[in-house]
Picture (cartoon, rainbow, N blue to C red):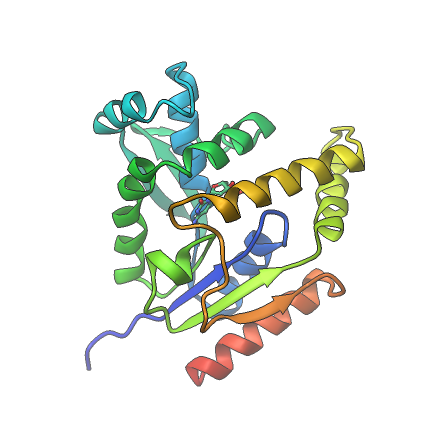
Amino acid sequence: MKNRFFNVAIDGPAGAGKSTVARRTAEALGFVYVDTGSIYRTVALAVSERGLSCADEAAIGVLLKETRVELQWQDGVQHNYLNGDDVTDRIRTPEISEAASRVSALPAVREFLLETQRAVARSNSVIMDGRDIGTVVLPEADVKIYLTASAETRAARRCKELREKGIDTRLDDVLREIEERDYRDMHRKIAPLRRAEDAVLLDTSSLTLVQSVDETTKIIREKLGL
Ligand code: DC
């Protein structure tokens, strides 16, 4: 029988718990978890190392011609490589979050990363999380979930996460940052963040992490008949 790979798309705004929920659900189902935000972060790092403005599409287009972004999985953990260097840890700063949101609005960047994402989905059963997976990257995905939570809930969660890492932050600052990022991600011209018509909506505002994982796993199992 022909190999059949399942593709699950999980989209939603920043801080909705997508990555943790998607990762744990992938573990439960034995699928590969693909974090697509990280590849925009990797491009943002390349742009920032070169000292380019995130708005300079022409210069970024030239840079992309000599840039390699690769994904590898080590013990189930995704590692991102920029021109052969493992940059997995270096792309998790607030500066890179901001730059990733800006460069991800550029058509040249989205086009550059499209095939990287599709190639993984062609040869693996994946749970891929991002903003446009169900709408653009994998429009034929077997299951689509739009995972969201109120901006206030997301800000409170992010604040707690940062504080646990010893980074002191004010809730209003985090909330403002989240609202700005949402606005940019939802209003960009190309591949804006939106719920695909056939995506199941899951609001995690009043769910714990464990409940969110249970819920997504249930939705996926039911749809795939697993
Ligand atoms: O999920 P994240 O915070 O790591 O994503 C970083 C940025 O990348 C986010 O502001 C929007 C962008 N992004 C995107 O445009 N499309 C995706 N599929 C994933 C992320």
